[in-house]
Image (cartoon, helix red, strand yellow):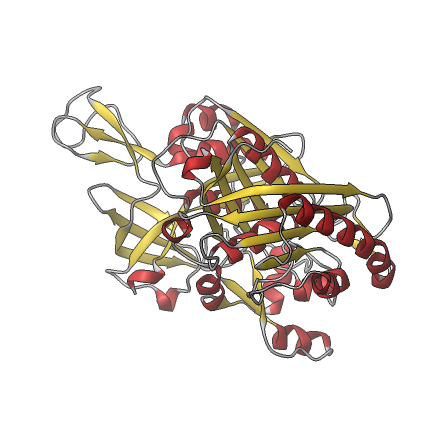
Length: 460
């Protein structure tokens, strides 16, 4: 095995909306029980989720030379979604960006590709199941990002890796279908367990580890996920994860362990998808200072409820009458390309003479009138304060009313933005907000991405 790079940083993002199992069961007459499902909002897709996870990585350090974007729910086909991630991170033109899409196994593929090259693995998925399905109830939406780099800077290193591959019909979806189909779960269980056993034992032997401290098994087959992990006892009990999140699941599961692992502890990571990939990782002495700022346990504890009918509408599974207003215009290619730094990286301009910050960027300063005396002013990571707002019940929106807020950014700059993840009665003047990359609308198959504001939870 040749994996010269280690994980130097990681971060995850779970959307704020929660679909309560009780509401789901009441609507379908099946009984719901307790708990909830993490659900992406109407303006989130796998691209925006992946960007939110990657933005949470610590700033500074080396820029990733490559981005490997894994998902089973790509926002575009015939177009590289990783390019939008690359642009939103403000990485300029240098570097390689590629999608690994279609199967949950692409999550492991992105991790291994980034480990081999020292790049950034971004794993993101919006998991859609038909009403009443296990995917709908027990699935999850989310994203995880892992930056690989110098082994001396690593918080975790891969010490062994074994992969086995098998072709059998357990789960599938044609490109035009909204949700996957599955064969009887016990057939998948009988096919997967020997593969998990072989890959896990060989990886542990290669790493010279008798009993791992942590064991994670990720599989879209729920029987395999429940019973397969029992094949390899762990010293530390498993933590809570949001549910199977497609290509992002293996990343979210690994991140949850890194949130808790002590220096020197080992992790057996098993991904049973069309075979089994087994990785043994070891946390380094740098893990204590390298944990993500928002652990998965805290992200799971937060959230706001969404009704089942709204959830179905957002997923396109409930065809409701559209707002009786003209649809937004198509986002044209040429202006989007010309304003890439503004549109994708939310970069304004700051006058070198008087310091006035312009949003969007301008050539002529509104403060002192200087011409072409601007420098870039990135604002995607800057928080701000709401100075006024309005709830527009006439504007086109898949989730009315549309809330517009005027934001004064810390350090200068004022802009009017749409507010995400909030209702009108939750907005107030003086509320602290942060930026989030979202999809404004989709017209004629073109996703118009831009930045919105959302409430800051940790300043409330």
